[in-house]
Amino acid sequence: MTDQDIRALVAQHLGRIAPEIPFDSIDPSEDLREECDIDSMDFLTLVTALGKDLSLPMPEADYDQMRTLDDLVDYLRRNAA
Amino acid sequence: MSQFIMPSLGADMEDGTLVEQLVAAGDPVHRGDIIAAVETQKGAIEIEVFEDGFLDKWLVPLGTKVPVGTPLAEIRVSDVPDAPQPKDPPPDTPPRELPEPTQPDVPPVPPLEEPTPPPEQPPQAPSELAEVPIRQRVTPAARRRAAQTGFDLASLGTERVITLDDVPQSQSLPRGEPLSAMRQAISAAMTRSKREIPHYYLSDSIDLTAAEDFIAAYNADLPPEARLSIGVLYIRAVALAAQKYPEFNGHFENDQFLPAQAVHLGMAINLRSGGLVAPALHDATTGDLATLMDRLKDLVARVRQGRFRARELSDPTITLTSLGDRGVAGITGVIFPPQVAIVGIGTPAWRATVVDGAVRPCRIAEVTLAADHRVSDGHKGAQFLRHIIKRMQHPEQL
Image 1 (cartoon, rainbow over the protein chains, first blue to last red):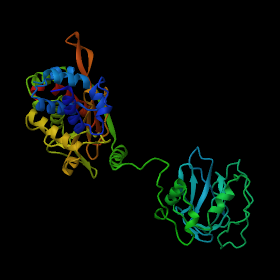
Image 2: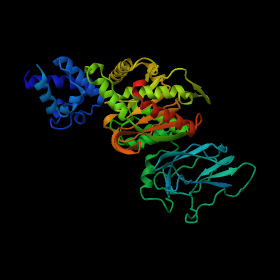
Image 3: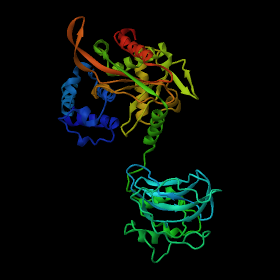
Image 4: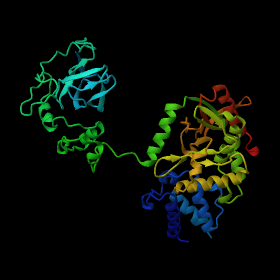
């Protein structure tokens, strides 16, 4: 998957969780949860959806590598088959 | 004869404008009757009379701004001719020369062209007066809206009482927008709570190290959809404590407390659109943690889509508000009536803590209880709170 594809996928799921936040307005180098004002339950929803789509286990121990939007996209690209 | 004076409606009030004369000269008045409305910085306020008798004459024309203590009308007190004034005007307010109506039974007619201004009268009073027709009766709410929107009340004539419905709402309200339905609902419940429920508050620290370790170990090899959040441990611990201490679990209605049989735990859930709701997780003491987590996720998802059930809003027997992992140290809740308790759990943080004689880094959160003093006291509240803390030390038993 290309970087663009992954970004589109993240945008799709984030749009469902935080519909009032335009994806373009998210600072990709800032903390994603702060940027989108999402709580741990929302984040679990996001991780669940991305894990299903990309067949990734998304372990909790890796959450630190998903801190910003750039981090998350990078993590998904590296781990997706 | 006594004088009805411009009352002081607060220490900061220096003057007021007579905006309504609700009783005509010659009419009887009774103690407690609303006979006038006065406009102040706080809005139009209705003024009652403190004695029985007849309103002899109005001394101040409508629309006139006068200092506190100025006589507004003369009251002929029943059966007590020339009774003394109930209240002397303040010494800095000299008695004024008044326009003399010749017939006491005719309402005073403010002269339209050339009103004789009282000495203290500000210069804008005559123009205000000109806008207010003779004897126009306007309810305070209508007058308030007209003042806010700039609507000209004179256009409505004097034939009948002007009510709120007669004054069109402004397209752009200058004093902010009305509350949304959500804020109105929160306002109603929280205002009632603060008015009716004598809250007492307790707090303590809770060591969440064991609970977080338990969650991390539980989740380690599970796919995201099967993972637990620490919130389910809070829910279960509070529910078990509420079951053990029934004076925190139930409803206070009609001057009596009705303890609930089951624990339907209200979960305070923040809404992205603003506001919050606290619907029930029914029977929160039953089922395993995985089931409880699924029910919690289902509830949160439905609430955030605005699809919860009426029963979920009316059933909670106690509420839990948790600040999650990105909040602040603590929260002291406001009880949601008719419930009698709310537990608050703050955001855990690393703290140096003495455990078994040694300082260790521990995950510490503040846990609070706000409870209804009509139903329980601090001693029992402390036992309840300590039970939650104790339960959280053994998450595997939840």
